[in-house]
Length: 193
Image (cartoon, helix red, strand yellow):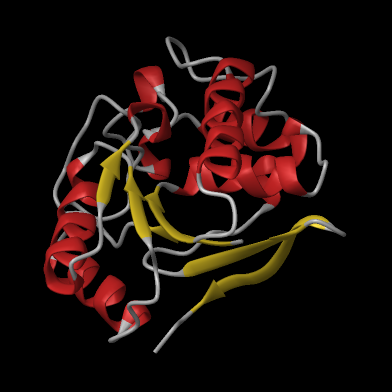
């Protein structure tokens, strides 16, 4: 089984915190990032996507272009960032920002989704994909947080280290699953073209 996870490209409005309450569409740059990463590759048997339009719009286009089935999974939406939603890192008080990145489990933005809850919903979706699509090649169109949670789960890492995983806009992370070794991270921030 091969699961390719692609982070959405850069949305309209540039870099700012977007959880699941802000749903900006892809910018032209974002579309270009994703199209260049995928190229003409179309070996997937199923495309799975977050419901957020910055993921869904590209997934729909790709699904229609190559006649690949498309499924939306609500639990693959990004973690909620509470009061940080819509803000850039420069607009957040510096100590609060630093505390978050040193310990994102205990220092959540006010009103944000608990990291434990987020991780649990993503891992449950991941496990469902592994059971429901055994032996298939999937493309999952999602968010940096979702991809970090999956990679941390595959690597048996603690939630404290999730934000130490760099997931670039419009790039692919590949996980191969075999009976012998289980899930293995094979590619981080790569391209398929």
